[in-house]
Amino acid sequence: MSKKNKENNYQDYLRINDLLNLQNPISEKNGMIAHEEMLFIITHQVYELWFKQILYEIDSILAIFQNDYIVEKEMGVINSRVLRIIEIQKILLDQITVLETMTPLDFLEFRDLLVPASGFQSVQFRLLEIKMGLKSSDRIFFEKQSYKNSMDSSQKKILSKAEKNPSLFDGVNNWLNRMPFLDFEGFKFWDSYQKAVRQSLQNQKNIFLKDSTISLQEKKQLEKVHNISYKNFIAIFDNKKHNVLVKNGKRRLSYKAMQASLLIFLY
Image (cartoon, rainbow, N blue to C red):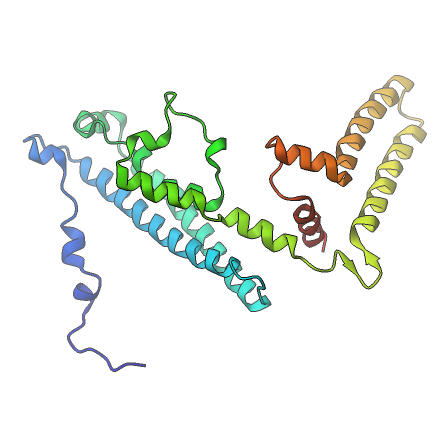
């Protein structure tokens, strides 16, 4: 450990003076001080700081997922950092309650001065979406325009680059694809699971068909619903059907990744 720097202190290390000078309400510059604008600025700046931390965690996770082999200890690191991200997201949601202490009329005092600025222009938020796995093809246009239309050229370049790189979803999918134990020492998880599911569904059907308290009409209705459920559930065991669903954007995990995720879930 390095020696203590006697010149370091709380104010200097965190650059508090710089930080506290970053809030510059537009209303003050326009000679009409809107008290609530300070809250608005600080809340959104805090959002951006937390976004930065989440991106920092995601990038570290993505670096681990780039490895062809991930040891158990590293999975522990990934898990702890994902949990940290979740806790930060809880804080982000809780901040809304603070912002809600500002009434719509309070906001209108300075809203027109912010035009055309919008939260849609947050580059970090868009990076979060991309790095977590949101694909461009799955985005919904706002006012029939791409979200990039409100960005400048340098921001568009950053986002386009991120879209070309593996996402957190890709990392998880690839890791699941490499999952062992689906076929291990004579035990075939998928075959065993399929057999168990079929037997369980058949047992459910037998129970209501043999129930003397249920009318014939009710049994027919239950059987109809059960057959639909049976068909939908059994479909997950069909590799070809799964790949068609992936191609059509109805599913995203690969067939083997889905098998591995079920193994982990059931284990």
